[in-house]
Image (cartoon, rainbow, N blue to C red):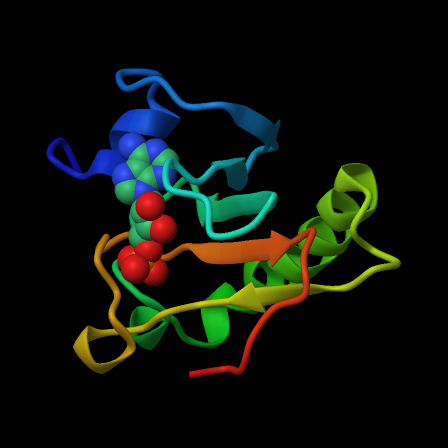
Length: 113
Ligand code: AMP
C-alpha cells in the first residue's frame, strides 16, 4: 500500500533502524520508544490488523512469536522479561493500520491497561 508508513519503511522509502528481516517479517525500532527496548515486528505484506487474519495466516502469525523470542534474547531482555503487544482497532488505540507487534522490555512494565 503506497501510502502506508510501515509499507514504506519495509520498501526502504522511509528510514528506520531495522533489526531483523526475513521473507515474511521485518522488525525495526519504534520511533517513540516506551521502554529501553521497543521493537515493532510487522509482516512484509500489508495486513491492516489482526482482525483481518484467518486460518491461512497461521504459519507466519506463529513465526511472529518465534522471532519475538529470538529478538528478546538478542536484545538481552529474555531473562528480565518483556511484553509482546498487538493493538487491534480503535478501542485498542491502533494508530498505524498495518498489523504490528510491539516487543517491549528493559524496564519494569506497568499494568496491562
Ligand atoms: P499502535 O498504536 O499500536 O498503532 O502503534 C504504532 C506505533 O508505531 C507507535 O508506537 C509509534 O511510535 C510507531 N511509529 C509510527 N511511525 C513510526 C516510524 N516512522 N518509525 C518507527 N515507529 C513508528
